[in-house]
Image (cartoon, rainbow, N blue to C red; front, side, top):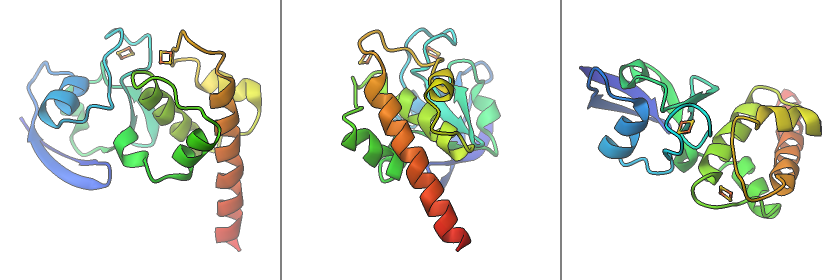
Length: 157
Ligand code: FES
Ligand code: FES
């Protein structure tokens, strides 16, 4: 079936197969390689995408459901204050888990998340990394929330 959706700010048209996962369509057809397959069962968060403003696991999402959606992946978030915060706080981890964390954190900030550490940990609980204590990621998200609030109140004037 032909589908049309917005990917990282650009409308695209492509073919989706009936039993194809969004994860496979993004990686194999569209070369969006920041979206990783970890567990393939909805447990690790590595395949996270921003789907109509929410973090969604693309390994569990049928590709046909991308039709008409607004989708962002880590590739499209490179120039955002969130990524700057990740860099400034040395929150970049391995290439496998980082894109999923970036998407989860972006969804959190976008949806009005607070600087509260426990709340941030809860929001990122679906993203697994076995290697660190998440401290740098936590600080990066707190920084991004602060900047987001500052820029929203500037806009409000
Ligand atoms: S690959 Fe989708 S949650 Fe692990
Ligand atoms: S799994 Fe990526 S740094 Fe731990």
